[in-house]
Amino acid sequence: MGLDLTRLKNAQSWRRLLLLLLLAGVGLQLYFLARIVMLRYVDPGSTAFERSQITQLLHNEQGLRWQQQWIPAKRIHSSLSRAVIASEDDLFASHDGVQWQAIEKAWQRNEKAQNRASSNGKAPKVVGGSTITQQLAKNLFLSGERNFVRKGQELLITLALERCLSKQRILEIYLNHVEWGKGVFGAEAAARHYFSKPAVQLTPWESARLAVMLPRPKYFEKLPQSPYLTERSQVILGRMGSAVLP
Image 1 (tube, rainbow, N blue to C red):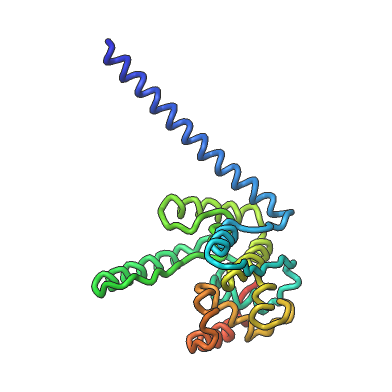
Image 2 (spheres, one colour; image 1 turned 135 degrees about the vertical axis):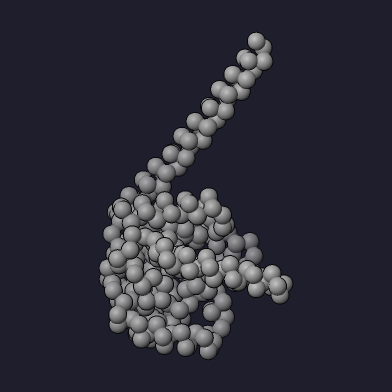
């Protein structure tokens, strides 16, 4: 009898724990949803990724070099929007937030890179298959760690962004907060940092060059004369004419 009561109490304790975890999970999703709905009307002052970078800069640098200024979409030259779409997410205007084929291809490339790295002892180069919306979801709310739980949360936030915000708004927020170098965030800061002009005055070539930097902005910031940067910019420049704006 005593053993049965102990088992019953244990089962009840587990059920309470699972219920609390479920309620916490639902509460977290409602919190994210409320924040996303607010983005319809309120421009985000900072993102989770920006705040983490500020912390690192304050910890590692003697002074904080920080450039970020929100500007409305009409003050970002359309060539930059076209270049970013052509470089980062060519189906941005039509997909539902995720390009499943791109993720599958990235997974396959990463597996091959992992196998090569295991044979030569070098760290593998990880390739992403994230859309602009997925990148925004990660930057707005999540940490930089990679695991299945975080990736699942990124997917839920991505779908919520697509349901609650227009494509134009998603792109506007993305361009204002994406990283373009150490302490350089957003199109206006990038245009002034690299070309000493506002984002509305960027030329197609300058826009293509900025777009190519996005996967590794801190790396290319140190190598402005990189042959790859020049060659890839030329490729993106050729694709910009067919890039579909939302």
